[in-house]
Image 1 (cartoon, rainbow, N blue to C red):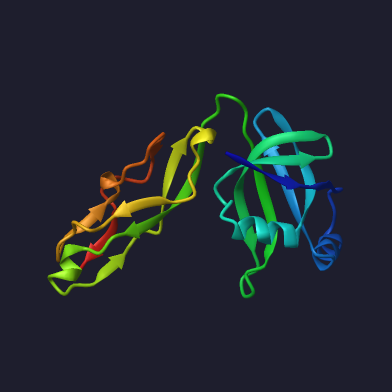
Image 2: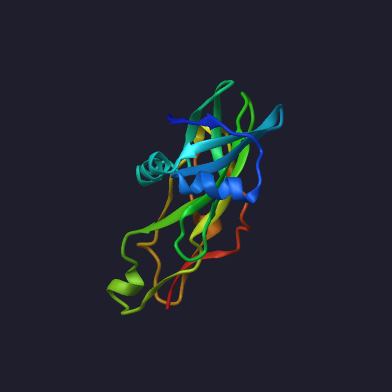
Length: 179
């Protein structure tokens, strides 16, 4: 499933011009791909904030560019360090038959046996994993069932079930530990 996001064209510009764009409530961005030239664009900051709040971070996007519509996904979001405001967005164009690599957040679900019965604490070690997937199979979050973990045991990347793609994060890394 893809979502829509409107953009406008922008000229490649200097730092003062980029600051003026941000002051006007816009976000400078770039769209690039293997088979296309990079395009500098502008995204409305309020629209993008709503877009992210709706859980669209890891979705395929129909970007309405001045030169036409393309399918893309968010490759990177650059944020201001203190206020966490979005400073810049990188979109990567997706062509038919491509596979993409991105980080998907891991959400631990359930209450571990080691916490319920053993009195342990669940410690989340890994918040996301790197995956390679067909763009149509992008997911917002990867759920990890931790309910079978006993005290002193861990859930590893190899235990995660990721339909439609390949997990690239090393299999021996721990996702969650009950201590």
